[in-house]
Image: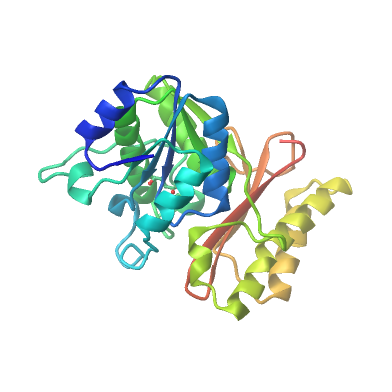
Length: 281
Ligand code: PAF
């Protein structure tokens, strides 16, 4: 696996590689969720590029940009074992050189859930869509791989690619969970043993909602009450717990074939998100 740090070197490496090219954008601190994306990319492409870049533009002031876990040597080892051919690990100035002044914004999907101005805000997604646009332009991949755990991000990125006619297929892969149900996340590293136990309430809440739906309780109030009860048992007060359409993230009053149940909560130092697709979505 080659490690490249500049756009020029990345382009040269991609140009001399076989197509199709699959890109797995990450912020590093790789875990099994990322590795499953890299393995998927490996299965479907002749060349696999993994980017590792902790993107300052998607963090709000006061968020964990400075403390976000960084260990490039470990990431490089794991990415290579999972099948990456090229690791793109640029310094911040390579992505945002002095004078950088452009941003890319998807409207309508980025002001709710995590994008609610009282939460991470639409600026978070503007940071994501700007850097992903740049990574697509730098790499020019045939396909790019993202995790379902970041469901809103995946919906926003599909819309970005569609609206801007980007010649890249967006592939979304299932959330990878620990054996006890906790969704894998780089931020799980922030959890104390006691917080980690409380964090299980998120996946339990999602399972409770799935059971309610399986039992024919489809009204939003019923589904959300089932989920909320699990959170309450663990003393978890969610930042949000909402049913939204997977099409356009509009609120859903009754579970139908395309319903996303999304939850976010702060547990100790970690802000965690998780979700499930309900009703056969
Ligand atoms: O999902 C992430 O890790 C990031 O939001 C991404 C897509 C790599 C952009 O920085």
